Image 1: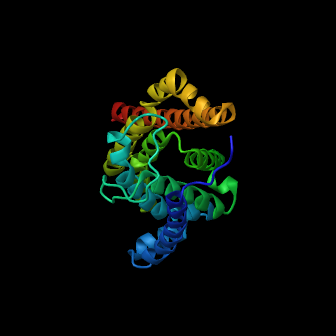
Image 2: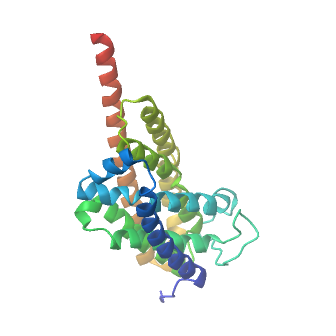
Length: 265
């Protein structure tokens, strides 16, 4: 297998992803100045790590919306063959008419910038570091070898759940309690979206990979590439599964507390 650089649209997307991330982070600080004084005070009282994560919310939300808009058409209506790869910058489908290769690059640009600008891996969270770096490696490999674009686009569309996660965090920063109705509604919506796009499809993704796609990838890029992408899928399954387990345990705890309060009353 001879290394090939990623197609130009991938590199363009990566560059734009880096720029938009940096601009969004700067804009987060600027927008805070026009927020109500009470909210500014709450943000000012955040600890260092919490403040870092707060200013990551806007770049994360902007990126999520861009990925949702940019990938939905190809992810759901495009060819699902694992060897399908559209390397054009401009395409005749989708809202933006920019190709999936461009959004793959944007995805990697965002992940690498988010990792590079973190104060430390501990502050960022080691699971997120593993997620960002493993995904960046896998996406770059796929773009270089022009394989697995349909699955990559679908996993990028998974950012659909990120928007509600960030809305929830803003509400908590503003002073709402996790037991408040608006936070409960947002939390349940986030859980539903996370389950729908990140967890429930995993058995089908894994089954298709084992039964069909692994052989196709192995024949196309060799054993090394097939094992690399298998490792990424395994990491993704473990991360999504662990996050889902944590959310389920928190939901059970939340409803258990509500039931206990009701019985006391």
